[in-house]
Image (cartoon, rainbow, N blue to C red; front, side, top):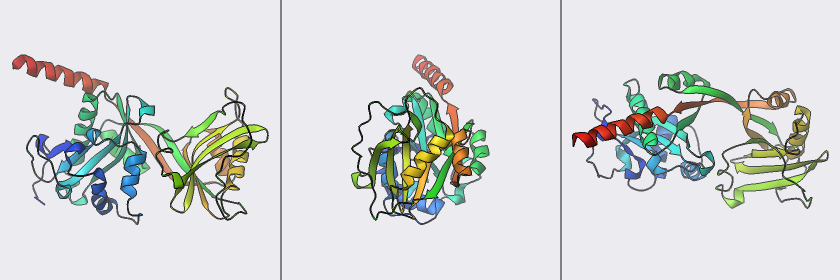
Amino acid sequence: MPAGLRAGVNRIVGGERLVGSLAGLEPLAQTIFGGQRRPGWLARKLERECIDPRACSLLLTSPVDANELVEVERVAGYVLVGRPPSLADLARGAGVGLLGSLRGRGLGLELIRASCELLASQGATALEFLAEPERVAWYARQGFEAIRCEWALQATATGERDQFDWTESEVALTQPAACVWSWIAEVWPRTPAGERGRLVGLVDGQPLRAWVSREGQAVLVQRLELGEPGRDREPAAIVGALDYLRTCSPRGTPVLLYPCPAQQPWSRALVEAGWTIAQRSWVVRRGLVGLRVESAIAGQSLKAAG
């Protein structure tokens, strides 16, 4: 790899220029982040989080021509971005990666800047990432603001059955329940059918719906609805609902809840009830409206000059 690699217009390209699928970046991601993951994890992530190659940016090891396609071996860093329809004009980052040997040269800054400009030109009004606490300062230097802290909570299942009881119950709910929390709406239906399920029932007379999925050895509750819309839900009621959900998986199975806003009283009530904080993260956001205006002005200037 060239020791003098520097970012530039012809070294950062859109993800659609990659030969093959973005899933081919999995070996690079493993090199950057390490750890043991199930093969195919990146393809699963790309599908579930609505990653659009045209919204992604790739940092290359060498310049390319305007319309040249690039092989995965030439990629040294990336910004993966999803455009789930449920988020409208908000773009959701799914990962930023850069080879360790290239850090400290300002390349990450250039990559983020190029990604923001690309998304602004596509009509996105803001870009969000999920940042580990130690990475918040880095994002702040790129113009992002920490807007909320989220927890992934964990406990163990208490069910006496050997199988996962994810079939919908026969209890008929007369009206939708109120949402307590939800991950991106598109993630659950994009999870393979054999790895997801839904629970419907009544807990202490309150309607309950839960959308769950298998994540390795664990069960993830992606969305929880409880109680009637428009009515406040006491933290104790939410703790009781989660106690019920723990009985729907074989005893000892890790049960994860995500995303749980750290500032919510019910999140803290769950911790007091014995749930542990498996992960802390911050949602960081950067507005793109100004960039869109600047791009439009620049485009008009170039047109006039031509």
